[in-house]
Length: 258
Image 1 (cartoon, rainbow, N blue to C red):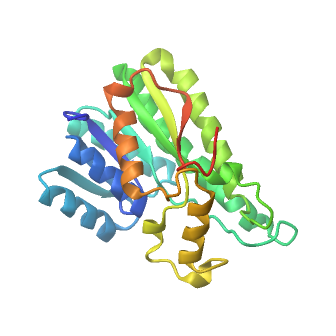
Image 2 (cartoon, rainbow, N blue to C red):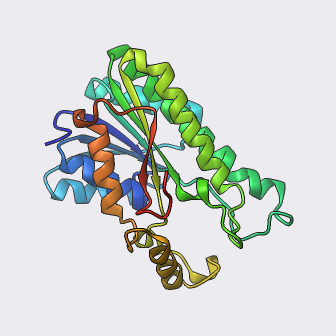
Image 3 (spheres, rainbow, N blue to C red):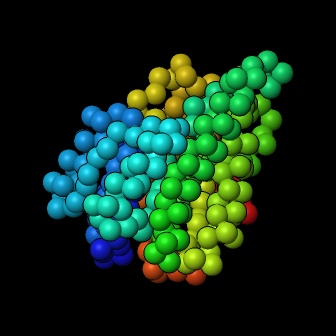
């Protein structure tokens, strides 16, 4: 198994993407520590992992709370001996569909502040502890919105937040690389599976129509799945990707070409 004997922390582990990555990590042998704000959702994912023979623990952690993030990371190290992998899938509170000339300062800045703050705090907490041990992998998450320059598409600060997260990832790779720590960002396209709880009123079109539009733009004629993200994260966190750092892993099914 790719991650046998590894300890992995997944922030936002109760969400669609975080849960998928946590399941993939556990399926590859990692001991998974799920962190997030809603215990019931975390416990649901942990229960699925345990029912499949994996090991998972949960903790309520607000990833915008510096002290809470540090205390949780310290507790994981004390219990498990170290942190080998850190993945951040925290929702960044983006506001979209509002024209740039009409969006408020608060709505525009919300994803930028939330995304950069949670990624900074969680990466710093993990990076400190990984550097002490001389190894570790920090995985971040952005989206195709960083290249979302399409007429009529109104993304607010979402794409800018993703761009900042990708830049932070490269900074982490440069600063922590000498201590044996890798950093990679996963850039995903919209994932229809993760929209199951969303009302179509929250979108500019019905979700089926948006899915069809994504497929039409994709070079592969398909949408990215939660399994795609989980499998990629598990590979990148493993020693098989030991030479990979400071880069963005494209998971957009070809809607974005680097």
